[in-house]
Length: 99
Image (cartoon, rainbow, N blue to C red; front, side, top):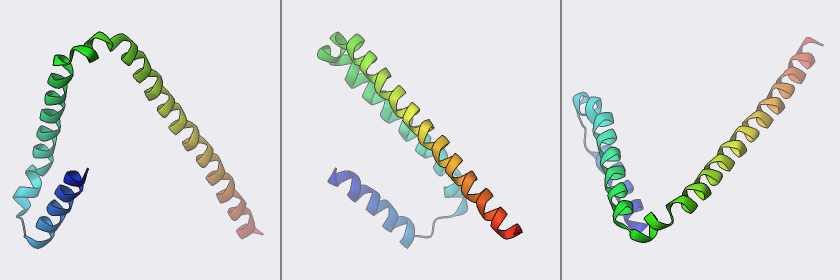
């Protein structure tokens, strides 16, 4: 974990100190996307060669699906709740202003 934090800090410091051209920033998104796709590819290879993971894939897949579904439902529920609270609060403030 320390390597991740140090890498992030080094990138921040380098970008703050060095003045990169606009051309560099134009391609930065493409470079980031390529790096992310490459990372996912390597992770897929590591999962594919791991016999324990491949043997337990049906069980792991179901657990992953349930976990992801729960995270999505929880996020949506919280957004809906916060949206209702925010709308009610803004409507009350509008009424106070009108009065």
